[in-house]
Image 1 (cartoon, rainbow, N blue to C red):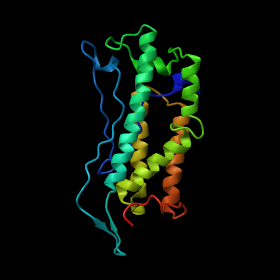
Image 2: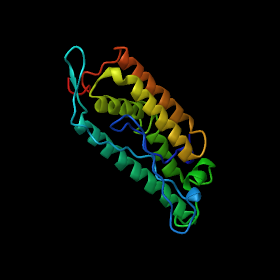
Image 3: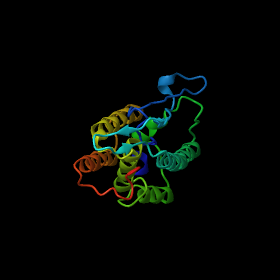
Image 4: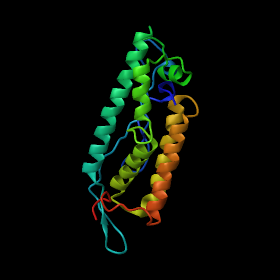
Length: 208
């Protein structure tokens, strides 16, 4: 996997009603369809209401964990975006023109120096921040936090993750790189294990 196959797309998380929000933007003087598209952003407004199941267990969103996860991902994504933009500028592309950043990345037209390529490979490696293991775990932790650890919401969480994955494909302009599919599959697997009571979540399950 090379950096020119890595989408500069933020992970799609769940909002307060387990739906996905997609945002696009246009640059001055160009058509929206040709403009670089803002990554899909998480929008979350915590509810003050609490949910209590039949066993008397109370669930509420873990807003502290949600805020922490969002802030961390946004910072790392901004760093990645700036790196890609710097590469484009160095190669003569003007970000204020009709350049479609996602198309250039998707088609492999961005030349990458060895140092940047090595850093990118490290980031998407098995133990890297954007690797399958860490990224799927962040998605799972977000699902736990926003549901308050209520496993009865597992199917809704899976639907929201699927909707986010499909939204990312639209932003990217086609099928996502293989690492994205693997991350998606692993995220759903973690949700399934949690719902079946097979995944240990003692350190992360909210409000128990």
